[in-house]
Length: 138
Image 1 (cartoon, rainbow, N blue to C red):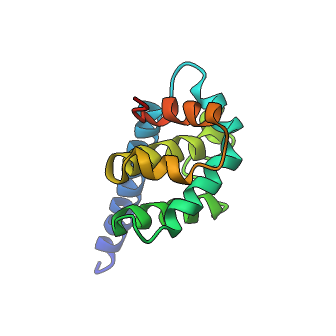
Image 2 (image 1 turned 120 degrees about the vertical axis):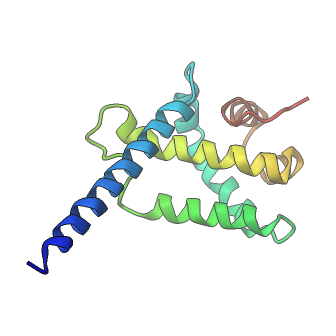
């Protein structure tokens, strides 16, 4: 009789985890780049990873920006994905979508100049990154 609340607690925790996961998947669907930008993100992946590492190591950037970038690096390094790879399209795209969302927030906080200063790729690659993250290149 005293253990009935344990079952309710487990069911409630499982429901909460499922609800958070569903909300994150919905956010990925909303944040997903449109019009071929996802393919560009995959093509730019090596340069974007170098950019993220360089920005995370820059002591001139605000601490909150660097923390976001280090959390992104940790997420990308983990073998566990938010959306399993068996889910068509989104399964493989979740890393690119999350990276783009984090870079959008970094650009808003740190500024375009910081991203431009650390960009290791070509001008065309930076233009694609600007489209992907919403960077104002004017």
